[in-house]
Amino acid sequence: MTYLLDLLQGVGIAAAAGASPFLPLAVAALAGLVGVGADYEGTSFSVLESPVVLALSVVLAVVAFVLRKRFENLAGERVMLALGMVFGAVVTAATIADHSSTWWPGLIAGALAALITGLGVQSLLRRTRARLDRDGQTTLAVGATLGALVVAVLAVILPPLGLIAVIAGIWLYVGGRRRESSKHAGLRVLR
Image (cartoon, rainbow, N blue to C red):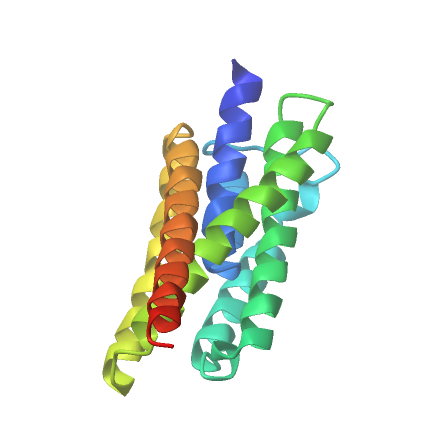
C-alpha cells in the first residue's frame, strides 16, 4: 500500500511538472526538507532535499515565467515538456525510493505522467492563448503556473489526487485532439 501511495504522490507531482516543470520540483524539494509526504534522506535521490535545489527551482520558475514569450513557440514548449518529463521521472522515483528499493518504475511512470499532462495542458494553452490579448495571455500563464503548483501541493498532501491529475491530463489531450480533427474535417467539407 505504501508503494502505491508513493507512486501516486510522485505521479501527481510529475503531472504538475508536465504543465510547469520548476515549481513542482520546488514542492518536492520542500516536502523532502520538512519531511511532509516524502523523505529522500538515505536514498540515491537525497540531493532533492537540498535547499540549493529548492532555491534553484524557484529562481528558474521565475526566469521561465519572465521569459515566457520565448517559450510560446513549439521549440520552447518542447524544451519545457522535456524538462518536466525529466523532473517528473526523478521526483517519482525519489518518492518511491523513500520506502522501497525498487524505485526504477517511478522513472517510467513519472515521465509518462509528465508527458501526457504536459501535452494536454500545452494544447489547451495554445488554443486559449490565440483568442486572448496580451494581458489575458499573462493571466493565463500565471494561472497555468499556479495550477501546477496547486496540483503538486495536493499530490504531496493527498497522494491519490495524483491519479486524478493524470486523468485530467489525458482528458485535456484527447479533447484537444478531437477539436483539432473536427476543425480539419470541417475544412475538408469546404473543398
